[in-house]
Image 1: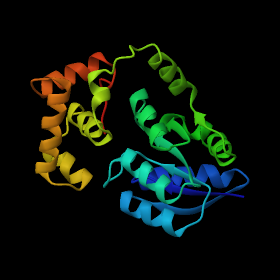
Image 2 (image 1 turned 180 degrees about the vertical axis):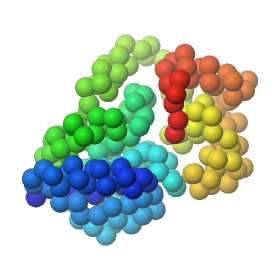
Image 3 (image 1 turned 90 degrees about the vertical axis):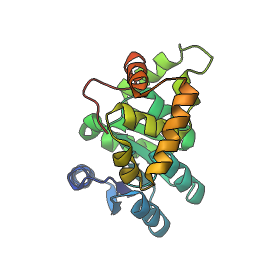
Image 4 (image 1 turned 90 degrees about the horizontal axis):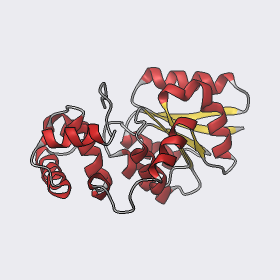
Length: 215
């Protein structure tokens, strides 16, 4: 029996994931969480083999959350299940300690196989994401401007280009407006951009955001 933890801030998503796993044999959903704080508490208190984790929950940055969980519970395998299809998110997630990465649009068809493979010690990447990662290998060795950003800065960058205000970002990440403003200043400096419009144009040009993208 594979024990699984579910962490997503949308109740309907957790319900759907639970239904998929419970409809298959050999799985037990041992606990659920709806934000970063409850996810940390859950991983500390509940033994499981796999954590299915959404990157964009209220509280801490998703990449930071992966890193903390792996530091505290190294045996717990993490499958990232997210709306972010950009390869840069996958690269950062794997570097932080994730064992798998898939988008929510592919969840119903691939979830059971992905959790099974990860629980057995393997690594899982959806076909679409594998293709994006392969394309990433052909990029210049010199880091692109957005690759110089820290994980938190990259998260804030993505939220800015998706149209969120500084206040909205601060509220969702549970930090002060001043903190987000500081991150924005550093992002503009590191990427050598004059303003937010420059960031948006850059994100579109490098396919870091879709026309209908959101957080």
